[in-house]
Length: 203
Image (cartoon, rainbow, N blue to C red; front, side):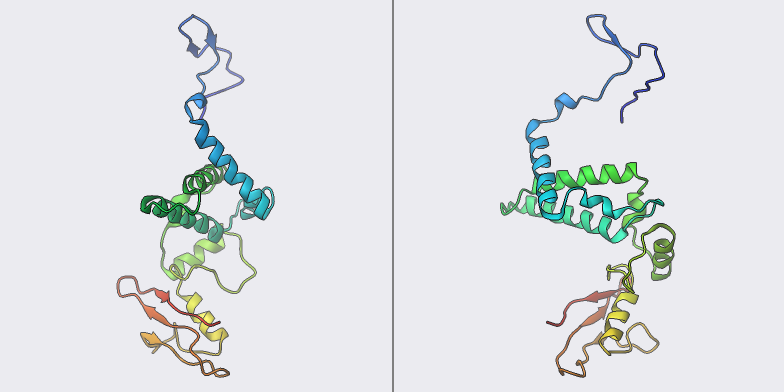
């Protein structure tokens, strides 16, 4: 971040020629043009696909933010880094990660604490965090099954399947849908964290 202060008129930086300036600017000239170009192309792709400024929908005027959208962008960036490591060429992974870094920097400027966003909490603490800091979705449940087990319970209850998340629920649940007699969901506990892993679904 620049130390520029327009109200401070004292020379803060002297160049080799003796010419002074109010502050020493960041070295934008050291950023490779190819990096800026690939990041710019990624922004262009996003604007063409989702509409210009789509990322700003993640924030509300009262300082809240869409935690699912932020986590999703982080996870997408990690996917691209893994693909880059594996040498896949189906997408511009560097451009995609560059877009995320710009997005993440802007999010911090808007007050987002990435450590808090990416933290794994107990279900109770996750619910409290969402109520305090996050844009509340119109959906009845959040979209992150790895961080809050109530999600799996509500999905199952929605499909007329009961038991998960309640006293006496089984470790492996694969009950048929009453209408189709076909399995829709398979959920299992994780021994290390007690969470739910959703590993199957319906049509």
